[in-house]
Amino acid sequence: DAFSSATNSVREIVGNVDGVQIRIIDTPGLRPNVMDQGSNRKILASVKKYTKRCPPDIVLYVDRLDSLSRDLNDLPLLKTITSVLGSSIWFNAIVALTHAASAPPEGLNGAPMTYEVLMAQRSHIIQQSIRQAAGDMRLMNPVALVENHPSCRRNREGQKVLPNGQSWRHQMLLLCYSSKILSEANSLLKLQDPNPGKLFGFRFRSPPLPFLLSSLLQSRAHPKLSPDQGGNEGDSDIDLDDYSDIEQDEDEEEYDQLPPFKPLTKSQLARLTKEQKNAYFDEYDYRVKLLQKKQWKDEIRRLKEMKKRGKTDMDAYGYANIAGENDLDPPPENVSVPLPDMVLPPSFDCDNPTYRYRFLEPTSTVLARPVLDAHGWDHDCGYDGVSVEETLALLNKFPANMAVQVTKDKKEFSIHLDSSISAKLGEDASSLAGFDIQTVGRQLAYILRGETKFKNIKKNKTTGGFSVTFLGDIVATGLKVEDQLSLGKRLALVASTGAMRAQGDTAYGANLEARLKDKDYPIGQSLSTLGLSLMKWRRDLALGANLQSQFSIGRGSKMVVRLGLNNKLSGQITVRTSTSEQVQIALLGLIPVAASIYRSFRPSEPSFAY
Image (cartoon, rainbow, N blue to C red; front, side, top):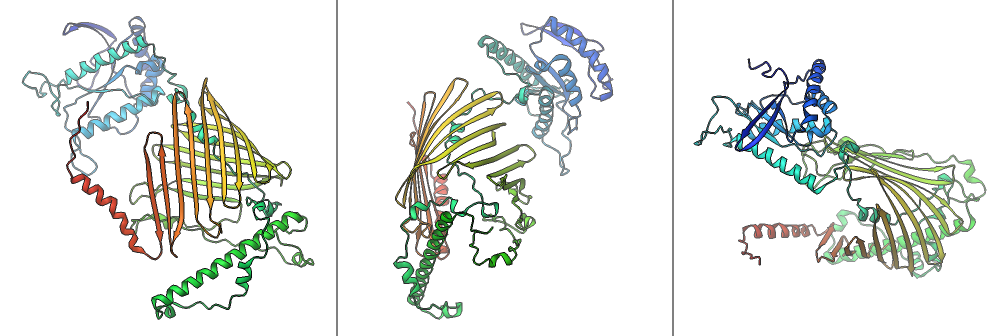
């Protein structure tokens, strides 16, 4: 009877195969039904007596290939095996799928499945069930195919072969021999395998110290109180000392003395010649630049005045109370406005789901938005996460920021939390404390950090900080020192150095960054940044240099150039151009495509290795 068990009790079979003595412990078949787990435990208890006396070198988990189950129905049975025999029983296990010559069933489209697809699907389901039952997601048990039917096709040597033409008997013995050899080699090398049940098998043999150190060396802005939270706008990130000499200059006087300017309509512009259009736009840009300069300097003066007077004479919106007239008017109400839509990809169709997530900007301090997966499937929703940001003031004295992003799809889950709170220590110092959660590989890293920033001289700020990272059972501690120096209004230098230590191992790093701003920054958008980095970990030394420059080309065009190079003489060059006038410049994107096509058709020259 093919549907009844051929083995009624546990028995031991000893034989000789090709000169190799083999001892087999044959066990009765186990039933996957939950109600039959009691009888399964009795059988496994008998098996455990044999395994204690003679530990098996290879464990064969036998199942059928032609089973059409797509779920994890065998998981209770596998967990019973693990609880009785231990999770180590799966370390040297081989999955044997019988009835391997069966015809593949029909797929979802009604056509017969290929033999390779059937084998891959069935193997994946069983391997996944074993990993969950053992609590070790690193397990990847090999799969062997078996076919003992008398009508099975044979080759010229008389050996039974599978539909793919392979002799299953040789493949089975090869897997058993190789697993035995690897097990003996592992015991000779005395490799200490980590606890498979701890953190589901995910742990780092060596903590990623360079990654943690790079995160520590990043400059962080300290949260500040907004005006409606009782803060002072004069305490913004703008260094007002750089504008101490601001006075009424020639630009403002020239703007006030300009004659009236009447903008032209599109029809009027169409009647102008090319030279007249250029002259018109030059005059328009010149007036706009002078106006922006005047508004920017007025804002600087207002911030400096507020910093001098403090917040005692200011209302909740940062404006001076003149003759109490503002006290009679109710505060302006927050009007909800629609947030900008998600950016459409360069190529899209009518099924793009961007329109589904249009929403208004909330009037509260909490901002929630969906997370778009730019590399998702076509015609898919594309949103697999959510991000939440909040700004608040604890006890109306300590500003705090929190930003969390959670991403979840069918296979992976990741979370990123960045939270910080700061406190002012007088006029020239402030302290920051933060708690972060990052996904490192397949583990979660919990980071506690803190730093204190103080201004020791007029143009210099010094920061000292630390961090404690919990990654599984690893604790990494780090220290950093950072110094910011302003040389005039245009040049700024930022230097930082630090070290990260864990498990007796230490990584050292240093960063140096120079920023050169436009003379009229932020009115002028030209900005150049040069960065140098050094990282030493164990015996490896990594050096890197990055150069980025952004500048305007003409009236409606901008260009960003990035250069990167490391000590292994590898790097990249990136040039990005955006324009609202010369649309033909987009044709330059065809150059790398044409170069790639040319290299694919060009025969490569032979290379010789000595």
